[in-house]
Length: 495
Ligand code: SF4
Image (tube, rainbow, N blue to C red; front, side, top):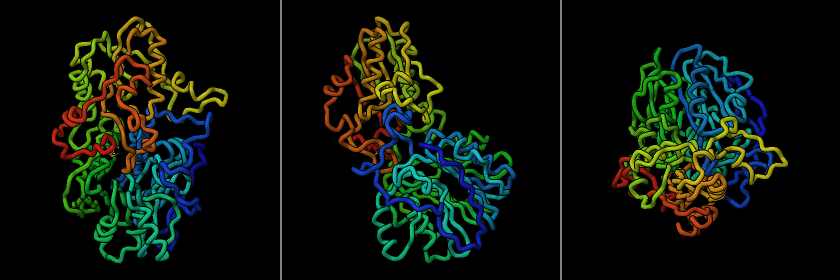
């Protein structure tokens, strides 16, 4: 990911401008398709995602009359940086004008030339990892369009499952698209809606799309937050300390600006905020809720609370449940840092086995880590994780990780632990085997690359080189997230 600099856009809302970034994008390519772009040129940029999972965007929305509104938005996004590292942007409006600053890379790179300087009453922000549309400059969000004498700005977390179909219909009717994102389909549906009442325009537009979307929508006189009827991606509402309201993908985004958590936006709910405060509408009938359980396993920050459940507590319970399901014998428990830590603590607590640090993560190897050309990609695990030999030598080790995607990284980690002298390695995974790709905004891998889609647990264990391999049971996972009858969570990638 090469930073391409910050772009500042400053428009008067009366201007009949074209949508979005104004840059021509190549034709859209679907994630996982044979012609999907490579994640990074080999040997140049090794994005550090230990398992092959990539988080899928974070959004922030603010309604407050503050000179610091862009800074508040920045701080909220900074707390959500783990949800997307490819690009970032912030839009601020005073009702007449909208100013947007966005760019490629982590927040400090993307907004290195500054934040919007407009003093306004509303802002939306976005950090992005692309699942649909590719990592292109023109796809950086927030995106916006001009319609009915005003503007509509939008930031989206999730993935639509019928975007291509709707886009083809809209293009046939003469609609122009300036990005290759599914988010622009929603934007154009709203912008071209005949409904005079904006909430109705948003509701009827959303009733045409399927899939996952948590949105913040910026309008001249109001801010709208929406969560899809199944609640795939999280979104919550908070109250700012000096008055005003804030939406964020995770509660840690509210904490970053000392906003008080008020509640989660509910599946199928639209919350509108204006000078009269927040109002709630339900634009879709309640059905089976399908909140992504991987938010609790891996994606979300452990200090966040999603849908009333502490992510840390859920991971701790996964570890405790794993310990109940583990039938082997061992001397110590170690995590694969960072996301295995909380489950390893839970495993240790339940089993009575001592918790040790067996692998130390190089804290300076971030997600924008640049690998030297001459260093093989085979060495990337060693660049990021180094074993603590004093803790591992001659011990029977339970190694806790949150998931196995392709298995290549896990095999290298097991090899590291063995080379450090571990006598036995028992790998315990705090999720069931992943056998399906995700359609709802998580970039896993295409199905055939998922090791559990083609191998049995025994075969995977042999491939990784472990003495035993245990995945958390499906029921154990559901119990850990307080949903024993699977009434609220999506588990499709384990089907
Ligand atoms: S398929 Fe898996 S990753 Fe995708 S939303 Fe469902 S639980 Fe989450």
